[in-house]
Length: 445
Ligand code: 9MR
Image 1: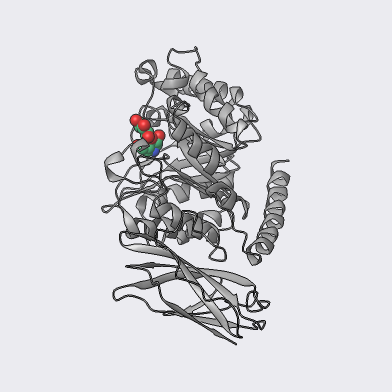
Image 2: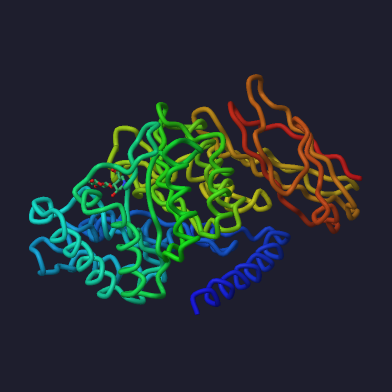
């Protein structure tokens, strides 16, 4: 039953992906994170705090951009069972209700974790703690039965560093089998939810991720119910996006589980931050079993580490360069990403009278980088191909492009957009570092 559900979801994903290709060739790019991710059968989510749902800027962005939500703290043990045996779901239910109203999935976070335990659980040990934990998993997963896309069943159970050992905790001291016991209880309570193991510092190949890998391999070989692995992906200068991120996601996927980027945030600003966000996004897109990406908050000011400005929207809710680069990456480099108004006026367009073509550039410039959208317009004669040359200011470089073949500052049509009727237009774009170009020339072929 479960297997069938996954196969079906896989073929739907293919159908959606085929649809997206058609859309891309007509240059109708999706213009929100969720819709763009959905074009390849994925989700784009965010952590949500229930008390912020009444903030109109926050809610506006949430409702517009995201098609998955993770309660940031509201489903944790201390929030849902503050007194043993008495469950409190108010704040988490509010988030689930919002998710439903905007058609978003819910990632449940987290059923069993050494941290954020209620005081009464911190004071338990042995079989009393084991049964309290299993009861907690059963009750919470039953309360949300049928409403959760993926559960972080167990969170952060491995030690940092080179030991490859389990993290010491009261739960670990109940016996090494506490993790599989939690997964079995979750499966029994909500058979439709995907069950994930979630951790940090496991984003590249290292001793910790190797230990998680061995556990997943063991679970698969013994039939312990596990469907996915979450990679939190909290990055900064000390812990940057690893160069083997995609390879690491892929090796887990090859074990027969889905992979998800569950708490993405990248400290920094401007082009460097935008580049890392785009690379993380592309890594997920390149792994068939990567279901989606969740960023750990909406605006920089919503982040658990706000001073590192690690998110896609600034404190006022404006889209950052990182937002634009993620959207462009989600649109597969084949569609037009900019959604903010150009910050410089387009260069003037000579009327398309004679044969040949004209080109105009719209620039979205930020400190250190830019996205350029170029419109190519045919003259009185239809085009069968075109090349646009731009003059890059010194220090500027093109880092990626879409709807065109790029070579330095020279861009030529790709197979599907070389033919342009007389007087008609097509668009391509590129992203770069430094100051974007404002001068271009078009040659017809
Ligand atoms: O973002 C969460 C913050 O509001 C809480 O105070 C904190 C308490 O532990 O947890 C933060 O979320 C964590 C997540 O639940 C698990 N992975 C690390 C996240 C960032 O600390």
